[in-house]
Structures are given as C-alpha cells and as structure tokens.
Length: 287
Image 1: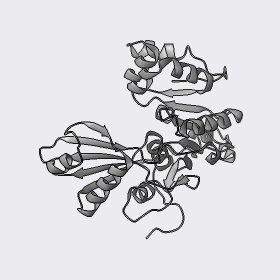
Image 2 (image 1 turned 90 degrees about the horizontal axis):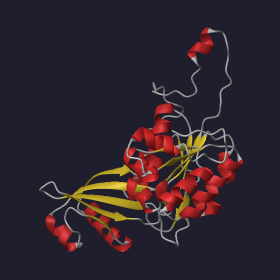
Image 3 (image 1 turned 30 degrees about the horizontal axis):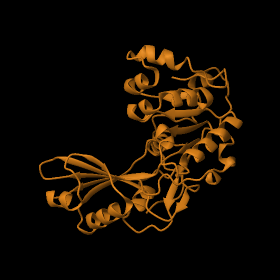
Image 4 (image 1 turned 90 degrees about the vertical axis):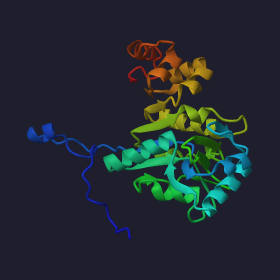
C-alpha cells in the first residue's frame, strides 16, 4: 500500500536544499524551479531464459542482435509471458532512465514526453514501464498509441549466450502536437538523445523532438543532448555538428562518441573541438 505524502528519504542531490555557506553567512537564496523535461523512446528491456529451440523457431541467430517486426515480437512476448520465462523487465531508454534517476536522487519533479500503449494489460511491457518509473516522474503527457511500446529482448540460452531481439513497436510515434508548450515554462533543462533523430522517414519522432527544442529555446531553457553511441554519430557527423551548433547547450558523450563527433581520439582535444561549435546563445557552455 502506498501512503499519501512524500517519503522522508536522504538523497544524494537534494536540489532544493539551502546552500550551507549562505546559511552560515545569514543570507537567504530564492528557491529556483528545477523541473527537468525529457523526450524519449519509451521501451522496456526484457531478460528471459530460453531453450535453443526457441531461437530456431523464431529464426534468431544465436549471439546476434536482430531487429524483428512487431508481429513476431508480440508472439515472442506472449510465449515468454505464458511460459514464465521472463526474469526481469527493466525500464529502458536513455532519457527515461536519466529522468527516473534524477527524480529519485534529487527528490524533484521531471516530465517525460513519449508514447504509451493505450490498452495496458497487467504484467505487460507498458505496465512494467509505468510501475517501475519513479512517482516523481510526471507521465501525464505521454501520448497514447494503439500498440506496444518498444521492447528489447535479451534471450539467454543454457550455455549463457545472449541473443538480442529488438522491436521498435510504436516508440517513435510521438507527434509534434503532443508536445505541450506550457511544460517548458520554468523548466531547468530539456534532455534529448541522438536516438530520437534516427528513425524511419514516416516516424514523427524527429519532428516532435525539433518542436520540443524550439519551445525550449524560445523560453531560454538549456538543451542537453546525449550522443547515444558512436555508431549513431558516425553515420552523420556533419549533421550532428550543425545540430549542436544550432540547438544544444550541453553535450553528454564518452570518448568514442566524442571522437566520432570531432575526429579527435584524445578526449581532452575532443572536448576542446566540441566547444568550437558554439550554440546560438553565446553565453551557453557545454561539457
């Protein structure tokens, strides 16, 4: 049973706490609004133990990572659920995980934009996503879709080999009109990932992402971009350099992603090169 009111937890990053130096000096600081807005591909990571014959039946090459159609994903999920082969279902998605952890550690509000299955059955991926996300993450603005959210199956055979089957479902179905302008008022940042711009031509997610970025920029809200993987950036480095120059204030990347973006293998030189692409606001900074 969940009791009303906020739990009294000790958090690592209490963003609303007063600065102890201000308190010692007898000064008071105005409490700032700190809610974070994020756009993400809503998906669930599914960990299951399966026999080799199941892989053969679904034509999945052992040890490979394969994109499968939604129909095959639905049949696979129903069988795994029926035969109780699923060990865990975790909330996936770069931005979704970031907002969950932020709200958990900072005990503060965040707002997630994305999609969610309109019909949710007990125990399904949509149910797991909603039940495993922090209650401080506002999911009220998720756009309903007639189908499943994204699913990434990690299928482990008795010899310990892992085979991955990935189904996009409707995770790229977020439309620009489902991005409400009011949620950016008073926001501290907008968090997006490079994955949002890597979709089929018919998917509305890239346009929805651009809409969110435009609304954030209109209100002076910093835009944070996580680069995802080096492969996503290496496909279109010039596009990403231009996108960052035009829209982004903070870039989150590892050394491999930094090299794909800048061409520099040394991490410090790569960071210096990243700063050569100033955002439209000259006062903005990126790390």
